[in-house]
Length: 100
Image (cartoon, rainbow, N blue to C red; front, side, top):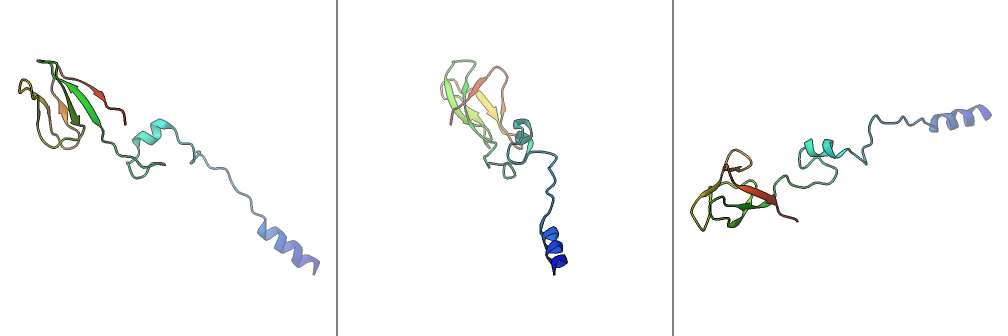
């Protein structure tokens, strides 16, 4: 009877090995590389940005993954053109990411 208790006690006691990396505190560079749905906290890769026209210095709000050509309202200069993913800014345009 004593032997059965010892065997049951040893069977329920298991050793938990340590993981190679911390899953609750991933590195920021590692999180940035992951797909937007496979991150610890899901968030999109897209953002809005203020683009300054090199000709008239007017600021226009542009979506980072814009699917159409964005033109300056002041001087009709092309600010960005769509690509397969992110929109490509024209040379001379400066931008800043809008805060959320």
